Every structure is written in C-alpha cells, then in structure tokens.
Length: 503
Image (cartoon, rainbow, N blue to C red; front, side):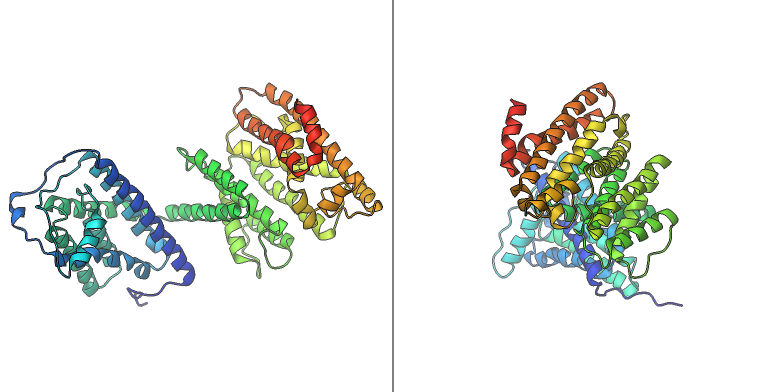
C-alpha cells in the first residue's frame, strides 16, 4: 500500500513557475475585479443595512487584525500543498469564480456597515491599517475574506489528515471571527462568504478536475506561451495574437482550432528557419513530428522534448478539430512545403524565378485555404490566384534581408549570377542593391507586384458578398500598404515608381 504524499513540499522549479503563474494571474484578476467593484459602488450613496441588533455588543479588538491579514499566508501555502499546476487549477479557478460572484453581489446589493468609527493607537496600528486597506470600501456582502479562507480550508482539508484538517478549519474560523472583531464585516457577510465558498467548491472543483477540461487549459496555456514568444521576436505576431483572441470572443471553443493552428504552423516555421533552436538538423525534427501526427508513434529518442510535446499537442488539436479530410491533408502538405525552404538552406540552393514563384504560390495557397476553412468561409484560395502571388512577393521582400543572411535565397539564380559577375555578393542585401542587376530585379518585382494587386482587386470584386471575402480583402490591403509605403521606405529608389503609380 503506497503512502500518501506529504501535505507540504517544495515543487519542482518547472511546476513552481506554472503554479506561481496561476497565483499571479489570480492576484491580478482579483485586484482588477475587486478593485473595480469598489470603485463603481463608490458612486452610489448609502446602502443596505444587514447588521443584527446584538452585533453592537461585539467588541472592537485591533489585535485581531493580525489574524485577518494571515489569510495571505493561508493562500500562499497553496504553492506548497498543490505542487503541480493540475492540482492548483481547481483552487485558483474557484477563487476566481468567488471573486466574480462576490463582485456581482457588491454591485447589486451594496451594503453600508453600521459599526461606529474606529480609532486605533498603539502597537497594532500598522497591522490594522493594512487590514483595513485590504478590505477597500463597500465590498461587504459576501465577505470574500471569509470565502477565500473557507475555500482554502476545504481544499487543503481534502489532502490532509485529521490534525491538519482541524488546523485549517480553526484557522478559517479565526479569520472569519477576525472580520467581526475588527469591525470589517457583519455576521450576514460572514455566513454569506462561507456559503459562497462551500457552493463554489462543490460546483467548480469536480468540473475543473475532468480530464477534458484540464487538457483544454493545457492547450490554451501552450498557445499563450507560444504567442508570447512569437511576439517577443517581432511585434507583428503580437498583433496577430490580439486579432485571434478578439475573434475568439463569443466563440472560444470553436475558435480554438485557429489559435492552435497558428501556433503550430508558426512553431514549425520557426524551427525550420532557425528562430527556435533545436539540437541537430531541423528537418529531422519535423520528419519525426509528421510521423507522430500521422501514425501516433512515440517520440523519437534524442528529439527536443519541449518542441515535440508542444508541436504534437497543438498539431493534434488542429487535425482533430478540422472538419474534413481535405483540410487535414493540407496541414501536412503545408508542413512538407515549408520543409523545402530548409532544404534549400541546407544545400545552398538557388532556384530560378519560375520555381520560386511556384513554391511561394503553393505555400500561400495551402495556408490561406486553411485559414479560410477555419474561418468557415465560402471562398477558396484558388479563387484569388493573383492575391496568393502578391502575398508570396510580399513575404519575400519583407524578409529578404533576414532570409539572405540565413542562407534562404529568394533571389533568382540568373539574377544572382549577374550580381556576382559585377563583383557583388548576392547573399547580402546591401551588396545586392548596390549592383545594377540587383536593383533592376527589385524594381521589376515591385512592378510585377503592382500588376498582381491590380488583378487581385478585380478577382476580389467577383467574390464580394461571400463569407470569407472580407478576409481576403484585408490581406489585399495589407500588401497594398507594404507595396506603396513600407517597402519604399526600406528601398528609397522605389519611391518614384510608387508615387507615379499611386498618383
């Protein structure tokens, strides 16, 4: 018979980061909701009277403020009792639920305390003022101080023996008594707080402990972490993340495939580009990932565990939640198409213009089609071929400096030969633009993009009114802006061409 784990213990560093993040998240959430409720109720004069006649005989004992503020210590113990994020999650979400329910009561049933003015002098002054500050104003019924203390006692008690369970119960009882003895709450507030704790824990804890709920939280945490990492590398990924979360409001469950899909594909792209370092050849890691996604095979020994665990989880969510086999096949095809760029880097290949344009068109055909499918659009990427080509052009020109620096040559082989013949290095953007052949190629590409955008406008006009068309038009406007403003700022010799075209 195995022994029960110790009640208190030190979590691993990885788990402490996760449980600490949950604790910090709850703290920020509480401050925003509790403080907001206090601010709003401050605009309403007066309030309900819930004091009972005999409460006027309850003495005011400032020293009990030390017990009142001990609730912070009681809550802090959760880090050493719930030593994994899975164990901590029901507790954290129960406290969040109590905060929301309590704030609603504060707004709907503002209470006016009936205690006489309190004057404190002596050694307990600072402790009392700390306790009084914690309580803010008007947030009385129910007492969240009591609710949190009782929730901790119930939750900790489930993992405790008889002695520890009794200690936690007495601690919560003492905190409840302290709210009366320092005249912060009335008896009705105390009983309402205890009832809130009991009811919330009975409802929230079983639901949060379900395997499906825990896995959903893990997926969302992985998405949030990856989006944060992407945004640290470039602000545009932060804007994409904000757009994804904004579009998820009101349809959170259905939009999960969009969040997971973006994070999965961007993570794969980062590994192939070298932006997310892995040990060994990135292509081998992606091959192993594809095998796991297609066959359910176990992780390949020696592979980067964090990358594989994250990418496999997000990839399986995406594949599971896509509604048809064609879309699922496109995900895997897109990953294999992305691998070709890494193969070009590894082998130092220079492709001709036709091969480059075909490769970029295929990449954006697959990615845009997937995006339209996820958005439940009624248009297909193939119906806007000029836009796909324009997106490929935009991607090349936007990242040209970085791509050349890492050995991804999106300059046609014949142009590269001309640049070399003139004594310049086509693998350096500055050297490329210093050559006549390089500048001529960039100018020709700029003009080609203009023609593509003109044709794209015509193609999109035929799709007007169909679900998904506004999304394509958004891409079109983004490429237009890059063509007319951002690229000419990077390459001033294009300004005259842009001005002539847009005038």
